[in-house]
Image 1: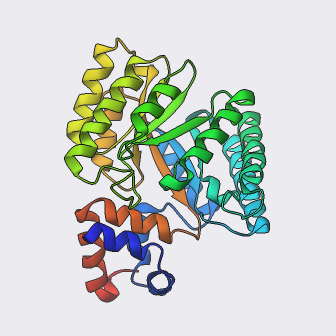
Image 2: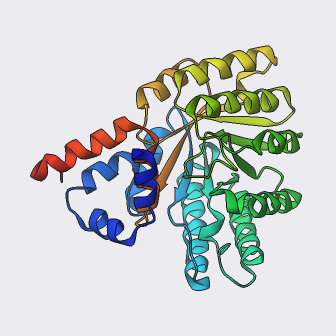
Length: 311
């Protein structure tokens, strides 16, 4: 129930106004969002890439204005140029939401998003890195995967994201478990109906393991996106069973979540990539992080009740 309420709040303009305007929230947001600007985010990236990899997300989604979508492309181009200039590109890629590139526009949105994504992929290739296309709610899954397939023709290292809570994802894993494919498997962060998604946590976990087995047994590059210690142990077992070397898959975790576990995996010689979001449009992302774990919500509530203690 709490998760559903938080996900509803993520799409509420009234809740957005309250949370984004309150000075009490800023300190909490900084736990999950690296900064409002690229200049504020670069020191975070330099620190993380000392022993980990990163994927950087310029926050924004559900854009319905073509000019705003074009500005998002400019922001990603600027980001990628900075990654190259600061020597971060070998350990940093970017993550992109297609709804931030115009996918939701009522006229030719898919074509516009594809054209914009191609520009970002070209900018990434120019500095020696690549792009992973984020997955959003289930209504965009087909369009997103279609665009990923088209991008991989010219940019074969383009990554895809699959969400284990969707009932269709096992079949999608089989389709994407091909040579050269990079697939991030996560549980899923949107409030989806039972007709298309597993609603029970145990069912989601079982689906995650089934999907991960397909990816580990295939010839692609699995990206294991979870903070769940049990699933991480299963992932390690599946990787060993498939005869995978340490550089043939990676673990992915969110900035500000289980940093102790991130460091422990990196110290053990595992490849760890941290998903680092930045930008002023942080509200939707932040609310989904609260919805994922009760501990995150408790942390937020304590900060709010602390009043002036948060700056």
